[in-house]
Image (cartoon, rainbow, N blue to C red; front, side):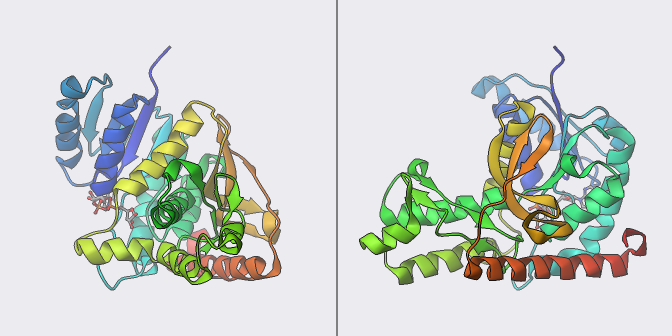
Length: 320
Ligand code: APR
């Protein structure tokens, strides 16, 4: 059986970490693409030279030519620019939209059967544009945000309660922005919903509220600390979980930016919802019931994503 092939479009901070994780997990051979000459080959060579010490065995290559992604099973897109302090994800829209056009054309030409995971921000609008520019089916193009946002929520909860992250499960719905919706009711510690944890007096309502807000601001907190770029370890780990679920047909239920065709009363937009990821790509959107407050917060988040999509259509009329 031929080895799987993973193409990484963008070989910067997240791209390099994706390559390392994919290689360590032996998910397949890795191709690092970047417009900046030498970045892909340099990182490929460096990671390949770490293989003897670490004991993994995959091929790594770097390139600036789209033809080298030919036949990729998975394409993970981080091409574009990250945030600097003071910028919101939305500030990246215009520049990264142009990048998505080039990337979409490259994927359409050389990797039209791939499962495509977009990470570039502003995420929900970029994955929408990438699907349009590439012309791939909507179930084969998905955005990474919810796994990351949920992981951040889990980390903060586990740290606060002084329990293992392994026993915490958290759920974040909606767009990957300031309006994202961390759902306490569907987030649990060893099966106990956070709302019950508050009732039990294990965590105060105020603390839960501040953790929820810190989750929303999770990306900005790291931008503020790093100053020269945005988070990359956790975003890369999150996308790798999605790629692994596809490649191994694990059918994990992962919060992802998926194309909605009427689910949650939303049509034609990508937004963060629970999705079954397996060999068929985004196989199924799980519709959980929302109470009126959650519904309102979700609608606000969808509205914010739709606003960005409208902005994309103005910049690139062919997307309309
Ligand atoms: N085609 C391919 N690669 C490109 C293009 C393009 N048109 N334009 C830029 N790049 C490359 C850059 O050369 C750089 O190596 O994309 C890479 C981006 O890497 P970083 O600047 O290190 O950014 P990173 O932290 O990896 O984040 C990438 O993911 O989370 C989002 O907001 C983040 O949009 C940003 C993206």
